[in-house]
Length: 168
Ligand code: IDP
Ligand code: MG
View 1 (tube, helix red, strand yellow):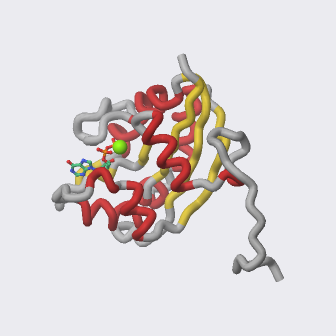
View 2 (spheres, helix red, strand yellow; view 1 turned 180 degrees about the vertical axis):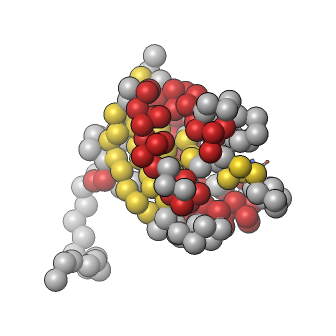
View 3 (tube, helix red, strand yellow; view 1 turned 30 degrees about the vertical axis):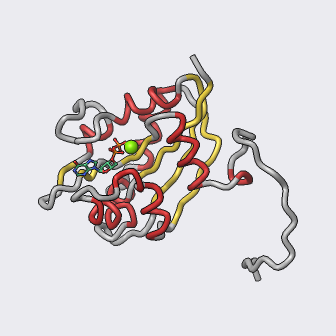
């Protein structure tokens, strides 16, 4: 048993179908803790980096449009970092198979996923599939200050000319 972290995304179809609460309560069965949470506007660059291992697949462009929200007019993804013993496999078990038609019907993807007429697996959630993927993905979607635990080495930097917004 290893203490692990894993990235979960509620994909645009999950948000559009108001499934976030349902998904989080299903995932709570794994008895893990949430150590980071954000709602993200997904840029093309973020989408393509997240799915770079699938570049060249026939469904790649549509997958990018799907995760960016182009197919659901939402442009939002909800991102969570879970931590706990064997977090990666426990979450994958509740999430179910990549193909929603093969997924166990009581899994999240089996219950709520679908295959579009053009063949994209709209499977409601993303979950990291190895600790290497989890580290890459968590670092892509979260900065060190957006996670309440020190999970990977980080450093403090002082930046003077950073443009950012503040409340007025
Ligand atoms: P995973 O999400 O179960 O880890 P990956 O192979 O990493 O599966 O694929 C990422 C996403 O790409 C899937 O969740 C699904 O939305 C989409 N996808 C994967 N394989 C196919 C396919 O054969 N046809 C259509 N979409 C696919
Ligand atoms: Mg994957």
